[in-house]
Amino acid sequence: MRVEFLTLDEILSLHADQIARYGGSASVRDVGLLQSALAMPAATFGHELLHASLDEQAAAYLFYLVKNHPFVDGNKRTGLVAMLVFLGLNGQRLEAPDDELADLVLGVAAGRISKADVAVFVRHHRRPQPR
Image (cartoon, rainbow, N blue to C red; front, top):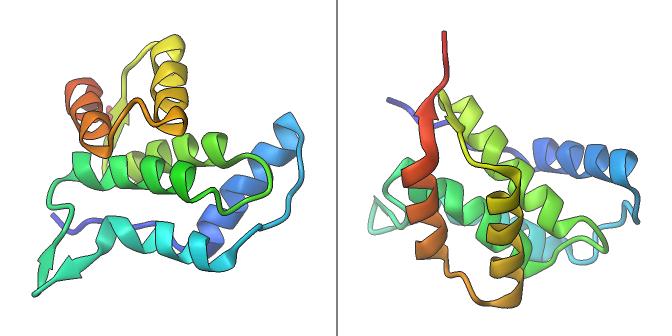
């Protein structure tokens, strides 16, 4: 199965949507950090993916968009939505209560939850999209 990764334009659109819905500044704080965060899920070394599984790739979107803080506002929201949209593009969905998702995102932002922990969470809550 070929993995579909998000583009810069898609991330910017997701961010703009989150800002329009919930408020905040639509500005990009650091385009280099944004590009870095977007490159991580598909990053390779020696022709091998650094994040080999869909769970790890999804986790990388959330983790690096939150930790790199590329936007003035909406980093946590955009990171979560990017992870969910990435899974959807690849025929998957996350079945988890909203409070657990909020705890996950806030834990990443506070440094209490690692990227590996996010991947485990995704692995336990990921389901195929209904057709």
